[in-house]
Length: 160
Image (cartoon, rainbow, N blue to C red; front, side, top):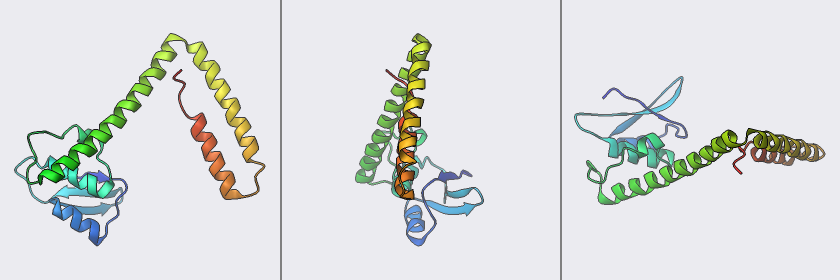
């Protein structure tokens, strides 16, 4: 019962406090960030925790998405149970896509490390070329946005 669940994107304000309380949780803040914790205990309240994450964070962390159960909704309405299921599905599908891409990268490296090294070198050359073009732009905001785009493009693993 003495658990604190981390929140990455939530600030403490009256609306968020009310949302948390409606889910049977309360918000608090310390030097490490914002957290939510149960206001009571004695039973499995994971459906309420899923709802709180969904409402406060806009997503359910994957480790919590695996806690969703067809047969258990505690005090949630059918609608909230369904909304939790939809968000858990969305989250886990994203995890699957991410895991499949990571497996492709690992398998390609294990199969042909020389090819991966060559492709990584080509990516770095494209990154340098992209940054070179961006450095000629006078507008700082635009130059920064293009630089971030260059970085994101070059930061992807070789998967094919």
